[in-house]
Amino acid sequence: MMSTVQGLAPVLLVIATGWGLTRSGIIPPMQRGGIEKLAYFVLFPCLIVGTLAGAELGALPWRALGATLFLSVVVMAGVCLLLKKPLQRRLRLDGPGFTSIFQGSTRWNTFIALALAGSLYGGEGLALIAVAMVAMIPVLNVMAVAVLAQNTGSTTPSLASLGREIARNPLIAACVVGLAAAGLGLGLDNVIGATLDIFGRGALGVGLLAVGMGLDLSALRRPRLAHWAGCALRLVLMPAVGLAFAMTFGLSGTALGAALIALAVPTAPASYLLARQMGGDAELMAELITLQTICAMLTLPLWIALVGAV
Image (cartoon, rainbow, N blue to C red):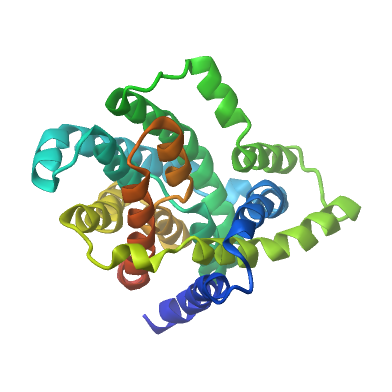
């Protein structure tokens, strides 16, 4: 438990620093978008390519990990859809409000997952989270867009446009490039590798600062039942479902820890942008992102400690 706290503490401190930089005015809120884009389009792709290219993929249980994460996402989405009417009635949600609960329950913050896996498990943890991206990001994007379109009256994008959007995702592209480099045995002990290493070193710090800059604590003076339900679904039920699948597929050690991290981190900041673009409840989405990030500071150590006990 103590090693878990020690691994998580730096992640939380950097997030808190990001929040403090915005609150103090050192970094104006208008600059947050540029910092997020720097991390999303440049730094994290470099980190992923460099990590995967140098990883011994044959030693990673990528099939069991991918199956665990994919099935966890599908089951969680199914639970949300089956409980749609009870959730709407009990939580007093309209269609757009339900989409925020759906996104908040299923999507994940890759910035925090990569930082925490790297802090706890080193390069192997980073490689496993990259595998998690391949397993989770495409299906999550398709499901989120479909649910938003169905519940907001917006136009459903074609499969071709969804495919193009996923293909343009820089994290997915980085995973493909890194996996290809590893599969072909292309060494990166050269200028390209050194360049990727320099960029990659800045990825985790800048990404976590961006997470902290996006927190708006003033919006959570009076959390509603919908907020707490969104936290429970994402931070408690999702990792519990994932743990059941992980045990079924025989995951253990670092792979089990990486799986639980991917399933127990708060929802993705990109959920807010999609909600705003497609007519979802963007305000509720922003509040869920903030509250889940805060609550995850308590739940993540418990899940990781449970993994250690298992």
